[in-house]
Image 1 (tube, rainbow, N blue to C red):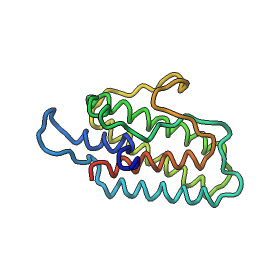
Image 2: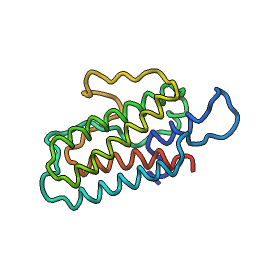
Image 3: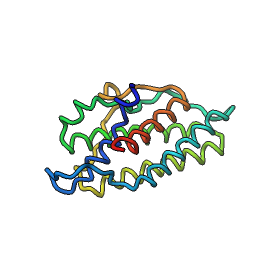
Length: 174
């Protein structure tokens, strides 16, 4: 039940951002080809599986802030597209920061390859958002007390959050 009612923020943004004109009466559609998002999701799963098999050299050195991957649809629908984009951009930024820290703290080369690819995928999603001419995203000075976040202390938790964030993006309107 929770899975059906609470999805990642990005799915909603992808659907909302499809509108090219405010007030467009047609149903929302993803702005990104679902095959691309499904590919990103599969790569996130692969990274998660590799993480589970990793025995050493694959941990975080400190806890990191990550986006919450649940959303209250009533609250979300009350926000305008700019507010929604800001939330998603914050989530992407948090994941990029956390994965970059993971990349620098691990020594497992196979997992490192997956993390590098994951970071590239997040940059691609960010580029799609930037191409939609939303207000330029300015990262916060600190993640301490940042609304809509929580902290994880393991690489496995981080990769699970990343996967859930992507799953929500791809599955929201389908």
